[in-house]
Length: 109
Image (cartoon, rainbow, N blue to C red; front, side, top):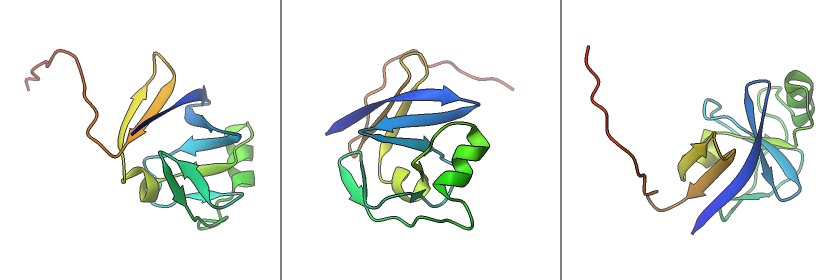
């Protein structure tokens, strides 16, 4: 099943709106954290910690400049095929392979 969420782009960060939660999507973070657990995203339910190496939802909120309920990192994102669409401001997650349409362009050195 495909799950698509609207996101806001704030100070260079993708903040996905998942139900009542505002979740920072961070492909570079190895672990997730949130102010409540479990979080439900992409059709899955994940038990996650409140603090990851000193990073908390409060510290993220202060750093980014907006309310953030949690960070979704690679421990969750690696379970999905992900499409971030900056034109539509959406993040799509699915356990299936996402079909992509477009034109392949060759790159040369």
